[in-house]
Image (cartoon, rainbow, N blue to C red):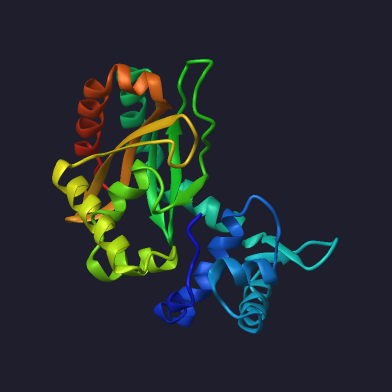
Length: 249
């Protein structure tokens, strides 16, 4: 497990830190205490409490009745409603994902970078009984899996270094290995990973651009054996789907 280092503390502005704490709470599988938030974001506990007070005041988070642990608050419903009302994803992305799922027979997903994670905002599940247990709204660290790495490979140097530092990748030799891997991904135009996020699961991903800036990644995820059996055709289908996105946003 990669650990964050204290050197990441000065890389974020107060506004960015506030958003990081909100995203940390929203992406957690359990309510978080201030101490847990402090450890996960490399933020002093005293500062965490100040950010918590602001987020609670605006109802973005709420305290659990059983104790001082925090979850997303009712203001998130307003964000969700606005997203589903005005986002072009449902009209533009889902048909592309459905076509990709039809071509490959496997689960297809659209991921976007959110903070230091890649978030699944839309997906079409596989018809197979044996399939990936992935869900819309699920996120993964931006250093794990093909979806994450294909996005990371397109970041400018400042954002790339900030992300690596966040996950404790500060050794020069280790950073050089990452730079080399990401250069190869960028040159190939796609990424392939196995068992980086879920054991036995492989993923093929390609970046999606808007005005020459990476905005997401389109991916196919499946058990390793099924990806290996039709790897070339899946890579071609994923690259083709990525070129169809984004729609007329």
